[in-house]
Length: 109
Image (tube, rainbow, N blue to C red; front, side, top):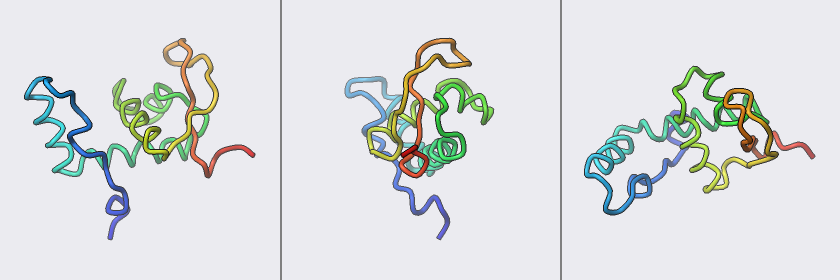
């Protein structure tokens, strides 16, 4: 068993809006079917564990990801309770106020 087998990704249906374009549904189903969604979520979770207290944009920059790739996964992980939003502060990448992320493991006591 590999690490991604232990990580249950988000169902495809929750990734697109009802009544949205057919291409959105197809893309979501493809991400889920190929396992890429689970890999992307796991990568986002690992980034938060490696760099707690960073914003989504800062994590994306550290990992060399395109803008938005990590933030979408972090929203899902937050809704699932896998990551925590901590403080709001000015992001060093966007210069806008943004949440920072951590996990229960990294959370200061």
